[in-house]
Image 1 (cartoon, rainbow, N blue to C red):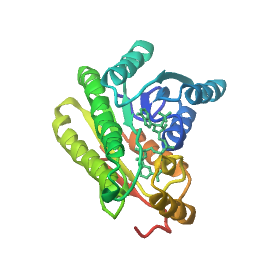
Image 2: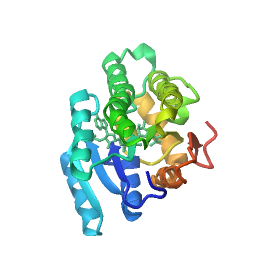
Image 3: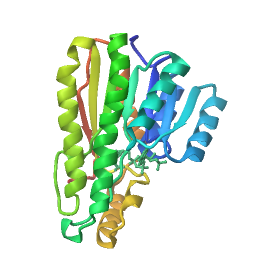
Image 4: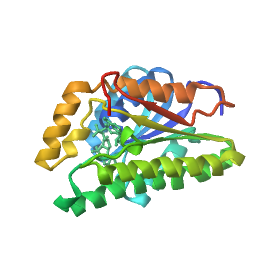
Length: 248
Ligand code: NDP
C-alpha cells in the first residue's frame, strides 16, 4: 500500500447520502478510485456522474449490506474493476431509536442486521483480499453512542458498542498482515440518519437535538481523509469527534 490517497481503491458502504457521500466527494477530489455501495441505485448513479464529470474514477454497486452475498459481490466488483481493495469503509447504518418498552423488535433486528452484521460482512469480504495483498485498511463507523448509552438509544448504542469491540479485535488480529484499522465515532452530524426514527417521541427529541448542534458531513470526510493519508507505518485506531456545542 502506498502512502497518501492518490490511486487508492476505496470501497464505501452507505455512500448514497450523508457521511458516506461526503467521504466519497472528498476522497475523489484527492484521486482515490471509488466503489460506492447502498440500496438506492439512482442516488449512487447521480453521485458517480458528478464524480466522474470532475475527472474521478468511481463505480456504483447496488448493495444491501444485510445480505452477505451482496457485500461479497461488492468487494468482488471492486477487485474486478481495479484489481485491489486498499480501504473498506464500513459506514452504512440506521438509527431507528425508541424506548425498549415500545417493543419495536423489527427495528432492533434491522439495526443489528445493518449496523453489526453489515460491518462483519464487509470484513468477511475484504479481509481475504487485504491478506493476499499484505496491505489494507478497514474504517468502521461507530458513534458517540458507541461510548455512551441514553434512554431510547439502547439498541442503537449496543450496535455501535459492538462495532468498537469488533474493530478492536480486528485491529489485534490483522497486525501480522500489515492491515490498518480505524474506528470513527462521530457526534451529531447533519445527514438523513434521523429519518429512520419512526417513534414520534424519539423523532421529536432527535430533531431538536440535531437542529441545535449538528455539524456538516464534511467533518467526517476530513477524519476519513486524515486516517487514510497517514504514512503506511502509522495506524490511526480511533477517532471520536463531536460538534463543539454538543455536551452528550
Ligand atoms: P444517512 O441516513 O444519511 O446515510 C446512511 C447510509 O447508509 C445511506 O447511504 C443508506 O443508503 C445506507 N444504508 C442504510 N441501510 C443500508 C443497507 N441495508 N444496505 C446498504 N446501505 C444501507 O446517515 P449517516 O450518513 O449519518 O450514517 C452513516 C453512518 O454514520 C451510520 O453508520 C450511522 O450510524 C453513523 N453515525 C452517524 C451520525 C450522525 O449524526 N449523522 C453520528 C454517529 C454515527 P440506502 O438507503 O440507499 O441503502
